[in-house]
Amino acid sequence: MSRMYHNESLKSIPVLNHDWGEPWKPEKYNIGKGFLIEGTLKSKSRHVINDTTKTKYRYYVLYIQGHTAHRRQFTDKGEEMEPNFSAKQVTNTGYLNSSYKLDPKGKTDRVEFSEVLKTVKKAPLASITDTHTPKDCGAFWILEADMDKMEIANEETIRLKTAGDCPFVFSITKLDDVSTRVCNYAGDAEVGASWTDKVFASKEQDAPHQDSNNQDNAGADDDEWDD
Image 1 (cartoon, rainbow, N blue to C red):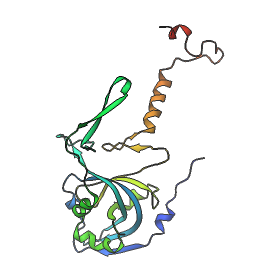
Image 2: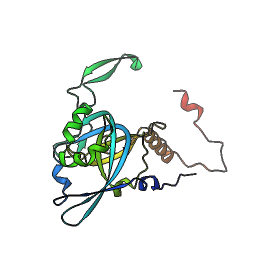
Image 3: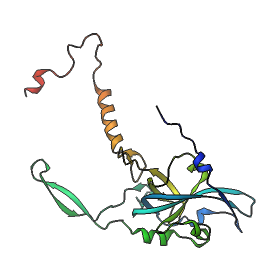
Image 4: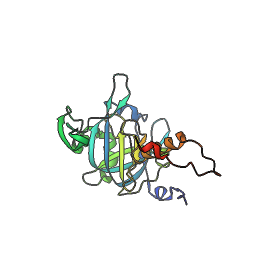
């Protein structure tokens, strides 16, 4: 039975109202490539920004304890690509990959989480979130409408991208440690377990149709294994 999602636990978080002395323009912080972060969600807070245009902007702030962080990378055409996760790569050697060696791969795009926090922290936004931020965590802003579409509990592991060198979330994914189903770093398409699903789905599509009333020819002929 599938589990029905509801966001009552999110709605129970108190809403904090803030008067913003100018028009609210988060895009002005969207400078730089941004970061790709994996970490643990420790807590959340809810905020409403009331700006001088009399418009309300609703956000959740996610307080993340970072495990790893990398610079987002893009092609010359502006298309996102995977960062270089390591300065070295494994190269298989020997018969049937019986051994391997480590080869240089170039400069890694990995950065310390402490450096990420220094880079994305913006004073006007930090004045709102600093008192709520647990130790060794970063405060990352996500629109309430986007957060309401997901079910992410405290202490779960997530992967997020920042929209430039700022605390606003560009995309977010929950990492499922049980099924090891994760998302592609560049495009957010599922890989891992779902890749296996796609392989089997393709095999099923390519398989010849069998008459349900005739099972004699099921499986491979013995001659196929003699070569």
